Length: 423
Image 1 (cartoon, rainbow, N blue to C red):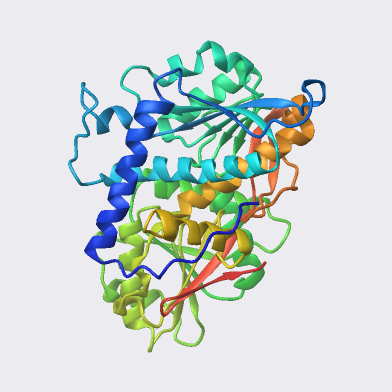
Image 2: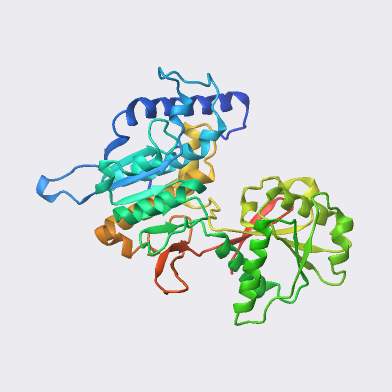
């Protein structure tokens, strides 16, 4: 998909390499500010033109939205605001764009004809609604969005209004979409995540003692409601789940009475609060020798990097994620090598997300053209992730509301080692 690059020396994370990475990112922002975003956010035609004009392949138009914060990074006279530093809040959107750009460059090598528009959702001169109302968007064939929570509804409504497939790549939120065959939620909603966790426990831990530890809160009540709903609807034997409310300062003394001394207790963190999850794991780890337990986390645990610390040693941790990449395949290694060589850093998960989403759905666009919206669930053109995009039906009318990725990977983390579990 992308051409091979030479393998540079391994990065040691020293200050000079960090400075090089920041410099590369700053130069990237300056180029984007002065070249890409001065004319209607139009990158231009990406692709190779070959042969006679009457035999040119079909050309499509794609729009990519991401929070790039270009107006925040530069002052009124286009001066860079942060001297030699690179602010972290820009990373996610820029890394997503970098991954998408690598995928688009790969399309170039295949001779694909694309007009690609890049929009900064943090623009100070235009709101997201104004960007989505631009004239060029009326002719776009596909929109890929790296969005935040309050933007999901805006994107969903725009897709329905414009009859353009919109891929929500980041937020586990449907934005209230209804009767919308153009909207895809790649990061599964909390309801889907809870259903997957319930089914996973049914398959592997149904005979274990099961306890949900949770703080009090509306989100925690919602999680309990989802588990209760699945328990009432399941065709198998419902799980026997005990719910235990904890205060913020809970200790091993509060947990010990609910742990079985004869069998491993499956302890579920019934909260999206990652700090609560880390405290729960740390306290259970202290009890692990006398009352061994397994901890099931929420999808927010995918961002926790501290589980390799000594205080978490010994305890078995499981959590779900829709995006799993072991980074052992050829494409991942090539992207990693490219970043080591040019960015003096390792590519983040958002780089791989930008790459695979852009590659997969742009390839489907070339395959199906105007019929893309009828083939959004096609499993071809896999890169790293086995997406399982299914229609979500309205319970009352049984009509399609939107599409959602139902695939979950379950990861086990123990003593600093992470591995995927097939199920």
